[in-house]
Image 1 (cartoon, rainbow, N blue to C red):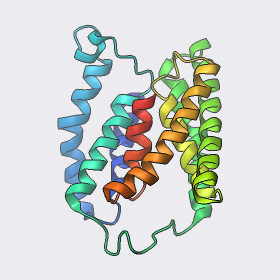
Image 2 (cartoon, rainbow, N blue to C red):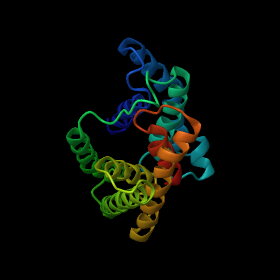
Image 3 (cartoon, helix red, strand yellow):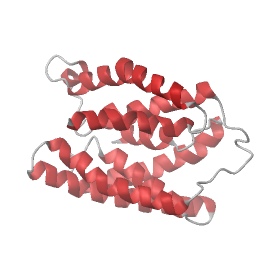
Image 4 (cartoon, rainbow, N blue to C red):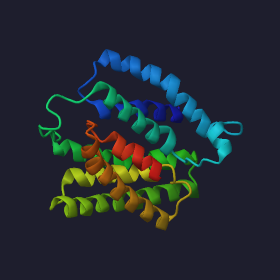
Length: 226
């Protein structure tokens, strides 16, 4: 049941890359096919135990950086390229309609992620406790790093940037939350805040792709860094 929550949330992340560009009926078909053809095989390769491809290679993914975030980020990137840009993009500004909801959502994610990462220990033990601690450290560090990077780059920070940085930190610490210590979490948080900011702003503008919620810049890149 716990693993099914991972499977349910991953397609929801993908949708953020091409928001406003696909009918709901088509989305349901896409989710079913993508889960069967992509998610399930990757999850088995990473978490399948002895005999599974990436497991035998020594890949360490404690809570889903590969299975969930890199997987979703790459899929979202490809989908937004295939579907094309929203009308008016990039000439028309398309900020979030309600920053209050954005902050509420980021806060809910931050709290819920403790269950996401610590719960992957599948026990109330020291591994779960350390996962909670490093999740908090990396997320706070990434939020601060994104804020200062945006401040230096654009002349002022933004609430949206801080929220994006927090999510980048949550993503990046996910695969390492069972093995990284506090200092490692600080480094992961700093790297994810900076690199995800550059990807979601500079690289996105240079390549011209329309990733509505920066799924590639935050989830794919953050997962790779973690």
